[in-house]
Image (cartoon, rainbow, N blue to C red; front, top):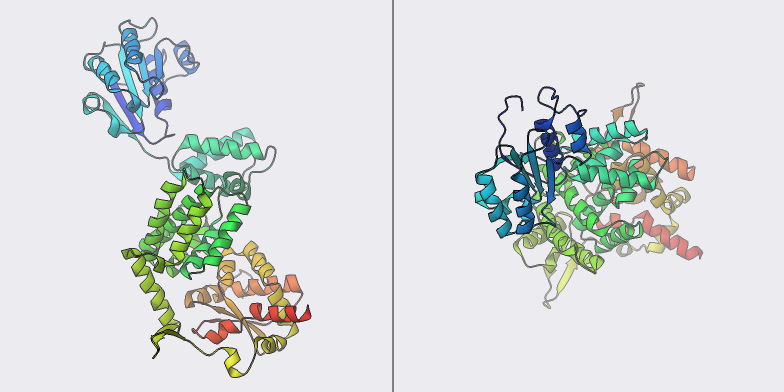
Length: 501
């Protein structure tokens, strides 16, 4: 605007909600402004105010999505023959220009080749590949990029301050991430969340509830169930998601996004630079990325991507998701290459844990594993009766204990839910499946008052708060001993309850 070198045709292309039409209107104001400030419109003159109120005859907008015939373009061409009655330029903004018919494009082409000096065309589109090359060659093209999460969150925060609405930064960050680079979508989602909680502080949990999204901790549990081949656990997670009113299509997309974050965290040197997550969720994602294998994650993402395309218009969404979750957890049910690799991974894990198969003399498959407690002369009922009363009380409240830990430390609760518990010499021994979980739970950090603490101390505090007991805890990693799982106090305590009944 400063130099006066103004083209006669511009093409604004980019994803939805990135400001193409808004910039087109600002451009129309800038070229017609009576008192421009350093090339920008003043916003106060009659021309600027007329364009803002859509009352100016110098700016014509056409939505090609619903007005795509050759007659609509001929109306614009006819209007372009008359010079502006006020201002310098007539600006024609054609939104979603890729929707024009072939005849309409041909009619527009002649005017683009030899436009009047006072006419400017601004074409906006989200699908530039659908525009004929003859049109593209006569326009100055500008690509609008997706807006970053930080920029969107900052704009939303400014908007909330101006409106006097109290919000959590974490909530705005989540809305910005869901908007996927679109400022318009972010504002619509924010408006939707505020409408549900008028006069209240907008928190992260409230945003999750309104948008039908699922917290990262749920995906962490689901991934562990899938990796362990636990179909029942996967179905329980799905039932939990549905009963809480979450939207299933969004659930599938969010789970795929979670797996994508794990894959990036496992593949890049500095995940903090690539992933836009809160500190708490970042810690959880980085931990889980060290447990899951990249080739597994790629297979899961491919399956979920195909599911996302099919589920959008499906009438039985839950059925489709159940089938795909079974495919994820049971790769032996598929015959493709990626499933074969996953089946090999399952066999390797079984061999490492001491569970494998051998061919018997009669040709049948006999399972070979460690002896169970019954082989040593102890029945489950006898083992249950031998449990100390304090251990029984803790085992009975284990689900509540995990929930209490979750409120303080989501990462710790995820690892607890996947661990087994046994009683040994009056102590409650928590057995984790891998050394990484054990290290994470027992790693001690300074608290600032000369003392140190670990996640196991958090578990002990929650147990004490819920049961009133000061139970001695011990943590160790599983050695693949099947006696451990058979002695799990959470299972044995059921025999005691059953016997009392």
